[in-house]
Length: 598
Image (cartoon, rainbow, N blue to C red; front, side, top):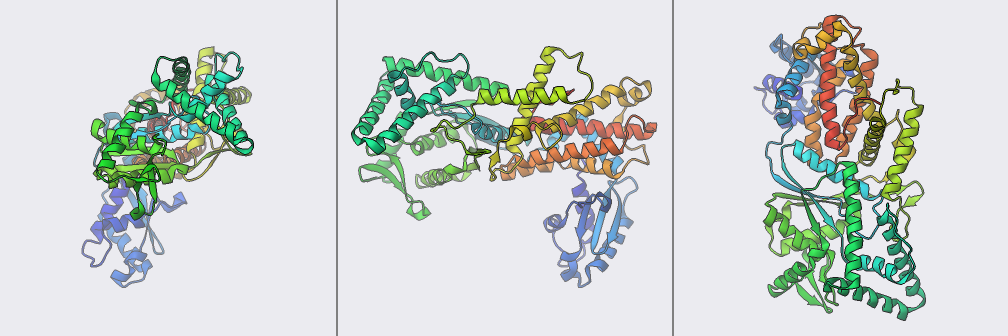
């Protein structure tokens, strides 16, 4: 597939081939930019970086370069013309040539290959990591959205991806939940939302402990002793507490499966905290014997003073392991058993110090693959009135969130005047509402960078007109509508069924600003995927999709498709087809399945 940026770089490199001191290709690439005003071209190059080497004023350099490049342009090439404006060279793409090439690459499958990384690897992306016996709430969904989008992008880039989940199904927080169920009258568990019900038990015991800590130290310690006894009961196997644990754990796993099913999230492998305690003890003993770990005040630590990270606690003084211990086990298992070359951990930014200690400890253990581990940090999801907290029960449970999203979209869809839906079945309506809800949720979580906090605002997130997942879905539905209408008119139907790639080169009038803007935006998709991979931040893809939806809306308004003359209609239908293919592919990579109608 033709990459217009590469074509321009080829032209610049050729024109400067005999110029001593000129920037190399990489330097020229850094100077290229996309003009904000489409009338100024599709790519701009400033002559300032050449002033020192050529000892001339930038406007004079631009004029000479422009003349040299223009003289070498091929009549049927990807560069239509070069305009010199002061010190800038503005390059205009030949839209018909680029569009025809894009469509052919989409049809023959080479577009997918063009999106691939030069070096493809086996990569594990660990994300979600929910805790059983706690409520799965809106805050957890940012992790799911970031992690799932990343693993989809890695697949689109040609990598061999292992999507992994790590369930926190053991530990003192589980014991807190079970203690409350055993000692308090909790009533009958609900049929739906049992995770939230269990989460209330966890929060209640946590509140009890905080109260006792302030008022009754003896009772506080006695309750902690009971929690430790619960964990021992669970590990012993055939006890009433072990059976209660197994039953409630399965409730949570079943609910997680429903969450992932609704979001269309799939994992290739699962890890469970409950399976890591014994391997954790073994790894601590192994590296204590090797002298890498050492005793400190009754506990066992790995000293990380050389990394300015202090001591990393790997076993507490009471003999219990910690998250760091279990992550040491998993880190080695990921590389040794799964044969991955890179390991990504999608975990909140509040755990940054933990992962610094983890990777440094792996290095001290002599594990060379530590450098291939990466913590993908993201900021919290906030409610409009502040931070969520599972401990305090201040959260929006997933099932309540899903219902609220669906209700908001249902209401707005019914009041929106966007054609008749009288012939829709109930199933079609419900499926459409679900898909739009997922789009709103995913886009809301991914519309800002990982380093920016997300404010969950259900009204803004479900806005059918503004910056939302619903707006992206509407753009794709509008494209489907164009082809549906085209098939009803014999004149346009014949063109739509013809060779649209060939049609793209036939219209002399094709190449209006709105047409070029949309086309060049579509051509940037492979670079956007590369940027997401490099930064481990799906917000670049979300932003590209939103900009694409806006550009298509502008094109739709400025450039009538089905009322154009035949040649121009063919070129515009070709552009619409390319937009449908590329934008829908981008949406699916974000984790959103488009709808044909809204």
